[in-house]
Length: 313
Ligand SMILES: NC(=O)C1=CN([C@@H]2O[C@H](COP(=O)(O)OP(=O)(O)OC[C@H]3O[C@@H](n4cnc5c(N)ncnc54)[C@H](O)[C@@H]3O)[C@@H](O)[C@H]2O)C=CC1
Ligand SMILES: O=C([O-])CC(=O)C(=O)O
Image (cartoon, rainbow, N blue to C red; front, side, top):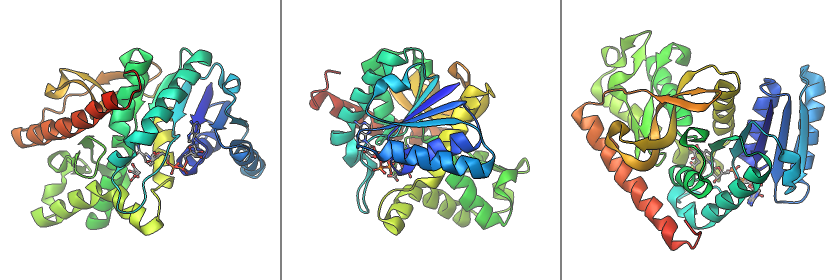
C-alpha cells in the first residue's frame, strides 16, 4: 500500500510520521511545494525508523507528482493554517486554489486514490475537492469529527477522571468553532450515559471547550495544532487501508441523510477499503437536528463563496 501526504508542514509531517511508525503502508511519499522541506523531513523520519524498528519506504518530493503515482490514499494538508484570533473560514481565499490544484495533480498519477482532506476550512475544501474532481462520493473524506471527537473525549475524561478509552463520544456537524456539535446526549462511559456522572453545567462546559478546542490551541501555540490532527489523519488512513470498517465521524457528501443534501458535513461513517462505505443514522432529537441544520446553513454559506473565487467550480 502507498500513501501520499501533500503538505510537509506541521500536520502533514506528523501524519506521515504516524503512518510510517505504525507501518500502515509500505510506502509513504511526502510532497511539498517548498524546496527541500519534504525530502529533509522524510530523511529525518527514515533515520528515526532505524531506531524504532520500523521498515517503511519514506521519500520526499518537491512538487514532483510522478513520485506519488499509484497512491492508494492521499492526505491533503497543503495550505495556510490560522493564526490566533482568526477563524478557519478566513483561510478559504488562499487554500481553495491550493486544494483544487493539488487534487488535479494527484489524480493525474493516482486515479484510484481515496482522498482525506485536512486543509481548512475543511468542510468546504472537501466539497471543493469532490465537486472539482468529479470523483465518486465515497472516495473524498474530510477530517474533522475524528479530531473533534478526540478532543471531546479528552475534556470528558478530565472531567470524569477516567480513561478516554472507556468513553464513546462523537462530534458531528461542521468543523468550525461554532458549527460543530458534540453529542452530549449520546456520550457514554462504559456504556452508561455520561449525564449519570456529570451535572448539566459541567457537560455544557465540556461541549463548549470541545467546540473551541482548535482555537484554544492556536492561541496557546501561535499557530494551529498538529499532534492530534496528524494522529487523527493516520487513524482514518488505518481504518481505510486495513479495511477495519471503524465508525469514524467524517465529512462526507450528504444526499438526504441527516436531512441535508449537496453539502459535505460531519456524520458518523464506516471507513474501509472503499473509502466511506455507510452513513450511520444516530437519529438526532429535535434540538440536535436543529443544531445540525444551523451548522449546514453556515457551511453552505462558505461553499457559496467558492463561486466567487474564479476556480471554475
Ligand atoms: N481538518 C482539521 O482538523 C485540521 C486542519 N488543519 C489545516 O491543515 C492545514 C495545514 O496546517 P499546518 O500543517 O499546520 O500548516 P503548515 O504551514 O505547517 O504546512 C502547510 C504546508 O503546505 C505547503 N503547501 C502550500 N501550498 C502547497 C501546494 N500548492 N502544494 C504542496 N504543498 C503546499 C506549505 O509549503 C507548508 O509546508 C491548514 O489549512 C490548517 O488549517 C490543521 C489542523 C487540523
Ligand atoms: O484550529 C485550527 O485552525 C486547525 C484545526 O482545524 C484544528 O486543530 O481543529
